[in-house]
Image (tube, rainbow, N blue to C red; front, side, top):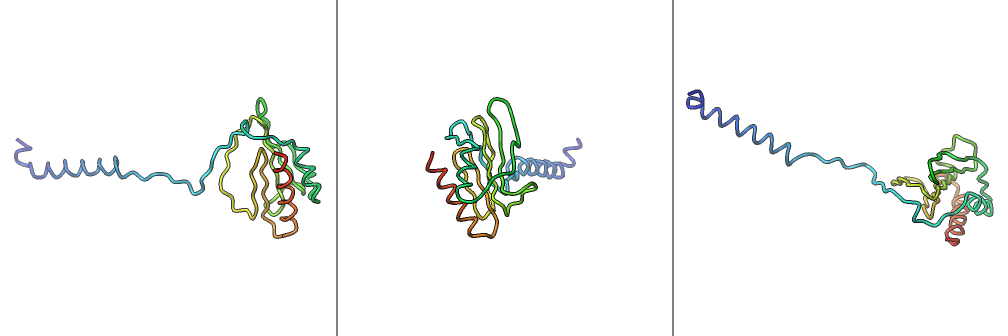
Amino acid sequence: MFLARHAFAASIVVVALAATAAIFAFARPRYVPEHQSQTLDMTKRHHLTVQQVRAAFRAYGIRLDYGGPLFEGAGGSWLVTLAAVRPPVDSTHVQVSVFGPKSKVGWGESNSRYEALFDNVAVTYDGSSDDVLRRAKAAVADLRSTS
């Protein structure tokens, strides 16, 4: 009896509910991260030791005397960071990360002036010295040639 008298109003309510449901079902916004990242599996990469990395940079006058283990996980999952200055190290200095043989690393886009990710090593530099940049690139080239 109620629907018979208010059929037009009831149909408007049904259409409005169906439209709202359709909007939530088909027009949902998707999350798009600002920066894309990928997971790198170090078990599938050539491995350089911390000593090899330090020696290569030392040969070009960049002494990575500071830093050390930053993370130690189970069974070969670790991270050692190296720098030429005492902590805290900012991006204007050469920073080198050496990852353990069983590590899985999330790596995203960087705004650094220079970034190299190869084997189990990551190098970043955002300083203004062209000489330091040239020497860091030369050390990276030497390390890559040993792979």
